[in-house]
Image 1 (cartoon, rainbow, N blue to C red):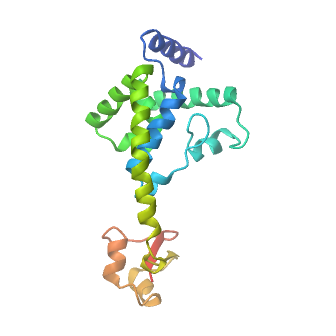
Image 2: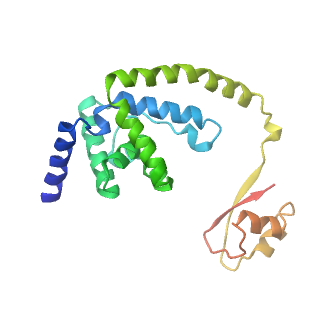
Image 3: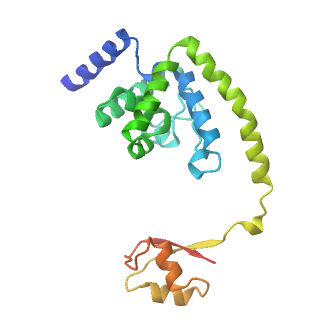
Length: 210
């Protein structure tokens, strides 16, 4: 109880200092997510479907039992607040909690301190209404980049996409036995796929090229 009260007091102090938590700025969250997805359009994680007023990751909806099609703003705000406090407990830094709200905690953990400070400073800057308008203009400019990328992706032929199957390792398996089942996959190729090691374990999933 004391810990929760301490964090709520911390949020109030941040607000008084002119740097309230990011969940008070849902539009900023969605714009930052849009810019990030435009920049990472050709990466698998650039297609995450952030949803709702606060741009929640699908995992958040599952964790808090939210219905994507029916989420009132009060309920969403409550979840956003709880989520931010969870990130604050995890990272012990308000700006990193802000960044985790936008991009997710895994991305925060993969970033350098220098990168986090840079993003944190930018987010703090765009919490001011006048600065936020300049960010909106960037989104409109970058829309052309997305359309160009979408056009290029449509030109990809299905025949050019690599085909593979997933093999679940069974007890007694080794890479030599697996390679005998799939002639197109040599032992060297399987070792490369298996992060350059020949050690496997039952239940492990291996992507086998066809």
